[in-house]
Image 1: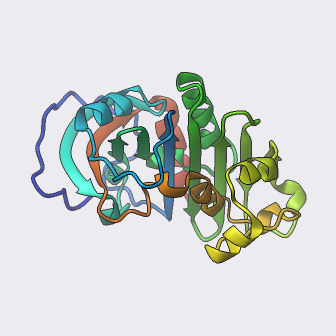
Image 2: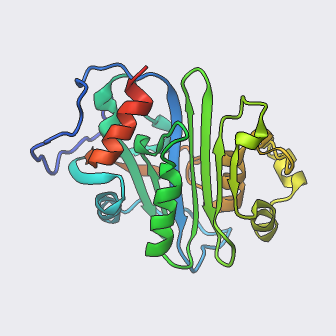
Amino acid sequence: MRALPDRAVTVTVMTENSFWTSPPQARVRGSGHCTITVVLPPFPGHSQEWPANDPDRAREFAASFGTIDEVLEYHGERNISDGFSLRARDDLDWIQVGVWGNVIGISDPALADGGNAWPVLEQVRNLAARYPGAKIVGGATVDRGETHEEAAWVVPGFELVHSEGWPCEDDTSRWTLGGDPRAVLDACGVTARTAEDADVAYDPDNPASTYWGGLGELILGPHRPWRRRRVRTSVFRVRHTRAATDLMEENWIQD
């Protein structure tokens, strides 16, 4: 991350003891969007004002998240719309976390995958065990010349839905799809017309032609934080776990 948010404040600095094998200036190859959102019951109403971020709860969530070994520094808050520029390896140590009332969100490059590890599925499963009855939507899209997409949804009363594959591939038999996405979408009021109106591709017979990340946002409905430009998040520099670091080197650094 090249520019820190306004009013940056360092609260804690710890010995890094990094698991990286590549140097901090190693070039990041590709771009992506990697988030998980948790909506805790009782689910907030549609008309409620969006709550302010709680930095203390955000730090607690960051420290307990499955890809994180240690929170090293807190650097204040920034708008979701500001985002991060992933140019060098040390940019991958930064995450955004928000806790807005009953809604929790994390943006973490460690959720990226190339089809081998399924980190979104792993973390969504972990969160479902931690927060019974919650609605959880995770998604990661990574473009390195070709795009890989992974999504996982947990909606109370339904089997977990998991989707993973390469949208550019014509062979849909290589696409992984588990659960009953139609049942989940129907239960959340997401129809083919809803998807069309939101310009979200949805083809029940062709998972590779479906925008799973967009459908996940429609499931969240008014509780999706990542399209709210002025929502504030807490910014942390972290040490990821060894397994998460190895996966990031594979997906973001190596050719």
